[in-house]
Length: 66
Image (cartoon, rainbow, N blue to C red; front, side, top):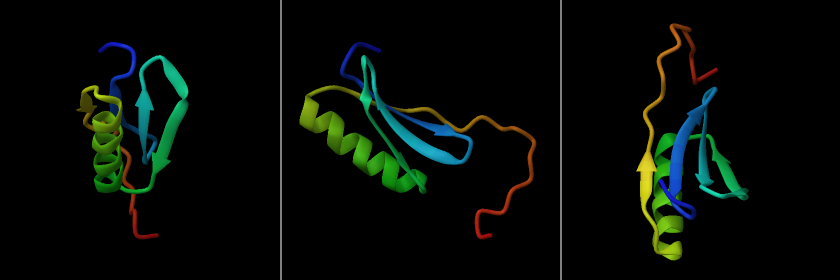
């Protein structure tokens, strides 16, 4: 990845879009779908690439409805 590229990652249940080399542009979202949509829009605006990193299995049992 190069500076300006947008990466969507899962950070402890929160989905985050980060711009490589520009940490001040990071945004967090409660849903994966919203983060992906916004991440792609940001990458399009910046003229860069967008990458989605899958969530890493932790073995924890969680209920996102609660």
